[in-house]
Image (tube, rainbow, N blue to C red; front, side, top):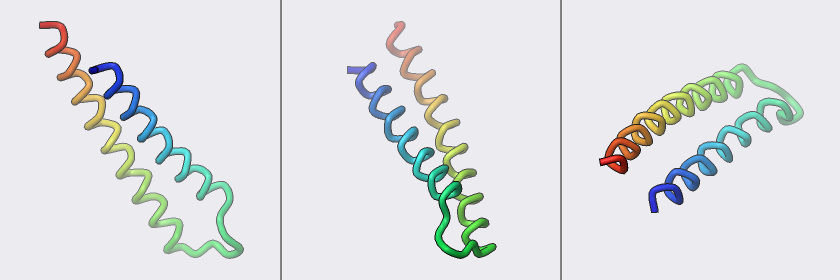
Length: 66
């Protein structure tokens, strides 16, 4: 059960990161500074989410080892 949860979380985070990267690489016809700021904010949110994911995975690994 635990490996399945970890794999699903990895897929979810990876998909979100890839969507952000694709948006950044292939923007619309015009790039507005507001869009760039939104992308930066989204990337920072993903970094925070990844840190929370790492912490929760460490906790789950500890609990699984007991």
